[in-house]
Length: 424
Image (cartoon, rainbow, N blue to C red; front, side, top):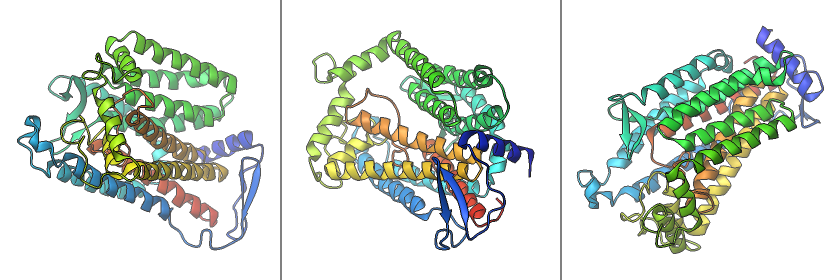
């Protein structure tokens, strides 16, 4: 047993009030989750080494549906003077390439044992920080609409903030396992992680990309909570963070204007300005009604709704598939998030604390970002530049989503190995 595994075992005992089971047998595997003991007595549960295939098929279904919607949302873009030199299949082909690259990267990521992800978590986080710095360097970072968020790689533009989300999941999980395994005052233990997240935030706000920073803060705070932080301290930190974000919005004229536009997008002042996207997104949902106008029948995508293939893909989907399509997407994302969190809980119950925190962190990432994107499209939340995971156009997002979910499947694969009495 390695030293890291020994630390994890001690951490398991303190969190769950029991001892991690020794060398389980294939017939009866005791697993403790939320103070309840579950015993696997049916060979059918883990009858073979593998991974969660329903989760994989759900992911692929969402990706393929997203591919269809990206094509639908972009097929008429060449009619706009801005995209006059683009073919009707330009964005479709680039999205197909991104999916292909993402699938290859996912297969490779699945081959990496979780012990190696834990070993190199800090290195990956530092690498992500370096890329966040480089994106701000002239002639390296690529600017679009005043934001410098991309590094051009020729065929694809890479967005370091997407890598930062994944790196923070690994870094925060590794950090909590290491620091909470030793007896140390809480504030002293988590201060370095807080500084690391704050540094990431400074770099992201310089781009600016407040949406990605918000996701990263939620990931870090979620892992902190799951890591066993005292509830009073957690809510104190949460209050401070909410206050910090409120101050950032209030001190920024254009962010404050977005809030006012969100509160009244139909006013004469905002309808053609900051509230333009939101108002046309709401029109799209209104046209969709219950069952939609049919695939390809969207009117708002005809140069009325900006960024229809990225941030507002859900609005096009709502117009073409109606309330039924929107509900299907929401239900699938809820199921996926719940299943990913369950895989994480199972890993923790099997004394794989790092793996469990990583899976739950990825679940929070996917679920929270989908919640924000759908909420923005529906007008329930202020406009924020976040794509819909797995579905929206964007090579970097698709690539890192695939890698993150491949890691979740790897965690599930290792869980099944341990439940059969094997080693990861």
